[in-house]
Length: 357
Image (tube, rainbow, N blue to C red):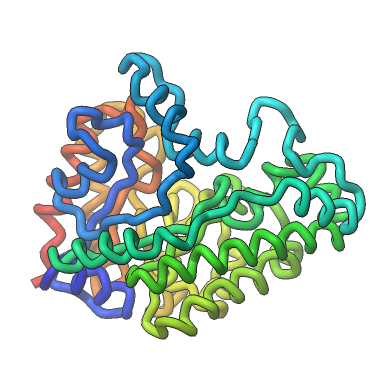
């Protein structure tokens, strides 16, 4: 099987020849590899990513980040670039451009005066060329719409401030609906550009889970986020009925998993095993959902422990991978301080135990 065939087999509920693998590296984790995404070729992962280019005025900001000494770590350049583009100030609660609106009319006026970031549709040809080049190499391709942490919930609370947006959801629902409608429209537009470019997987993100509970109740998620998520998915599948949908949320999201399946999600990420049991989810979902991640806790990854990493990789392949349904990967981002021996142990174990033949 080609890498792309392997990934699509998993996402279509079939068992491939061997388990496909992925890992989410901070670009600063492996500066010696050069440009962002080079780790895919280095480790032989099956999926590549395409994204919208930053606005031209962001070049000076990116040059500044790239010119910092190696020992200075300020976070992912992609995240920081998004913060600059959205005018987001994470260190000041509520200092978003939309922090003063108290009615939908005021919010609409703010949106008109200071619109959300505009992402040029002229990038379509560049995206399509990138996808075509990856497909020629037999690789699967995923694209994610530009966002501020997540397309809907996270962007909304970052723009309004966490406390203010929680108040909106409870006491000013019409205002929350107005903002989320605007974000949904923007996400549909950018998602369709990615789908038309030929991506195999549309990546959607929103952290709605904490380690032991959801950040918002299932009823609130159902009212404010579920129908909009479904709108985005339906729009993408209207162009490509075979489009696969990836959904990321850290933490505990067990109560909404059946409804994620219902609206068309194909694979969830990262399935942190210290929060949700991957084997239990596999049995419960009965082939209707795939799992991307599943390996390791923050403590497991944070300290040198290659034997534990190898053991967990083997367990996940045996309990979740058999019969299909697993794209194996770390359940936490591989930050610059992750011990190298843990990373090597992960990829070696996948090579050793990942053959289904």
